[in-house]
Image (cartoon, rainbow, N blue to C red; front, side):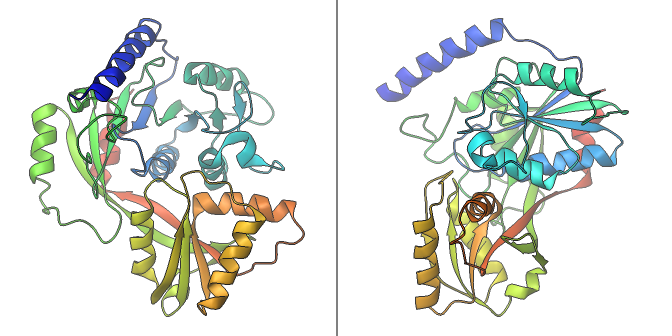
Length: 347
């Protein structure tokens, strides 16, 4: 372990012990969706898929999220129809709230406090829950303050564990041995899928089983189901089949997005990568429009997370005249056995 890793690990261990001593438990089941690395493993699509599956099973899901970079203070329900929702709540919470119209999304750094806030308000005029409540903890694997009944850990199928070193010189948030806490592993791999064997018994599966023999390993993928413009109009994926596009994004794993774009479009004339959670300005949009025009592109293509911020910018500026920006709507797809395992042992 290098000195920077050691210093990080000392701080990590102290923080973990302190928060575990004060860990609290909600009166309803909690499913955590998390990972052991920084960057995008697809937690938001997975959280949306698990919430939708909970509804299919007659449950009433409530999502608890930190709301990274959201300026709203204290526990609150994410309201995607606010004037500046991503500024208040963060881009991922707004995306989840838009996709899950009847699922409350609660923003609060302390997820126990957020859960108690939700419980206290479930019988208000806004929320009327008549079935079993279940909390879904977004990015919760390292959130020690709240007890969870199920830990689902996502593994990036394209990058796995990077250089296998901890922050600040690697992507690991904690040592790999901590994967022993997981109940279920899901390898996320955007199309085209990495060359993992169909039986799921490759080197990664063996390593995960060595660390945690009791946890099941599943494989998932992301499916592009439709495209949308900034006005919310939806179009079939085939709309892009013979089109030339310019791709741009501000996410943690831009490579996977570019691969997805290439899988649905005729040609990608170019791309622009911004930092994760980038807040778009009017100047950004004008630059992208000029790139699209110069390269004779049919469309500008972004992620859903980018689009929620672009829509916000569009609502604030009368100068926003770009009509050819589309986003890809992505769904997390996994075997039914995965969802069965997630839900079978929590009640």
